[in-house]
Length: 244
Image 1 (cartoon, rainbow, N blue to C red):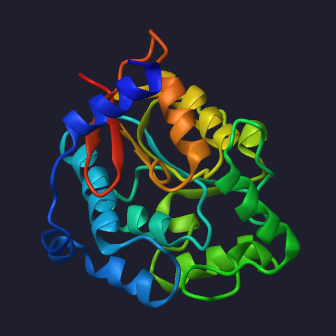
Image 2: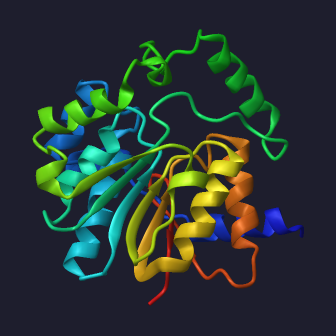
């Protein structure tokens, strides 16, 4: 069995069957609000799982900051803000503009999508203007946080603008990281820099494992490294948990 096949087999073994209806019932009201405002494309079950991951590390006193790498319009990070203790730091990383181009490590699906983005004709799944074209997106996203009741300054939330390669350098422990980098290079940088400081009991929530070939390959390659010890758990999306 090749390396990629071995990891997919382990993922299948770890997959948990989760009822979408049950997950939607437990989704917080905030998840409905950010979806209604068009601030996220995530389903309610994915938002519910993210909300629960943040609440769990608070309940279990898992140390470290929260990270969202790739925030788009900010909806999922707002859900994280609503779930966390007020004093726990939330670090949000994004270009707040167009995402970087893919590399040879990404498949044809990724390159075709990026051509559309570059052309200026991309739309979000709901037909709205693609978020990467929004002028002064950073300020727009900050405004959305405030409108939803979580202004940055009073909720220990910090924005970091730029490429992950340039901005993502976590120094202390990380409790939860929501990784939405789409392409191979963006995601592998996140994995390489966050996993070494991920607290035992902490979790990496992978947004695009089943969506884009580059993201899937980045995760497969990273988990194949002998020094990496993460437990894959399937919920609405792939969660990678560091054993205690």
